[in-house]
Length: 336
Image (cartoon, rainbow, N blue to C red; front, side):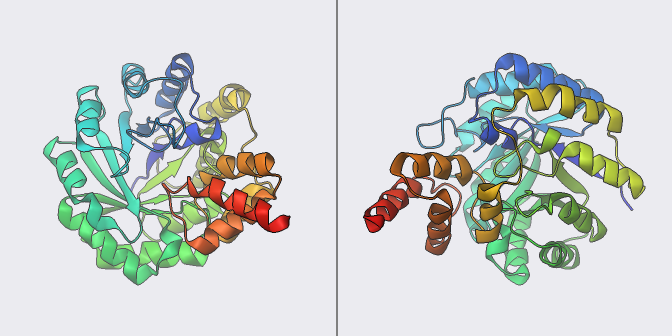
């Protein structure tokens, strides 16, 4: 079995869990410890990627330039990556990230909208970046449809394609079906990745299933830092991979210590499976909606779980956080 590449998302998806408020000092400290631990790629942008610091998605404490530059300056071995969601970030943002030293770009779209990624993937390839297709909310379509979208990204030049469980809604059978379909239908030269969320407590299990089916890039974060109930926790993932004798570059003790002594004290809200994060996985709602729904529920005096269920019924996808306020207002009016 191939050596597994670990893509750490503490400094990107982990931004969601603290409303994008990492300081420059925290970014530097986290980058250093992740780099020393042996992770292969450190992703560092606003939680919603390049261009994400905005009124709609929440302003980050530090500028995009500061986030990327600080990560690059403090990483001696790991590559620094960025996320780009077309419509939030643009190609000029990607060019600036590249100029700052980012060498990996993951171009992310909703699972049925890969066609909007063509120009951005091609731009990443032209810049000489490790260019990755990232199919979010992969539970929202069938494995057969998902692989057709993956083929589009492959045709645009992406050398790695990810099954992305943005809502933490995939069961192990769901994850297996999607990754195995990628393995069967995509080019043998195309690498397969998997990004888990832990809303149904399956982040580690699904990541291991993905590896069993041929995925060689796996996402994780210190202490599971991330949207919703968080991502697959890096220290837990590495412990399980060690038990299974899977090949990787990460030092277990170093990530254990970093999770307990560095990451957890930074958390403003525990990254855990509670009633709201569980509801994300149950309803299949995008994990970054959690804090928005929680705040709207408090403001309008409605149960945030009802907001999430209504949002799910409406078919909301990533980037439609602005629906939450309207839904909360509607539920409050219906309760009168």
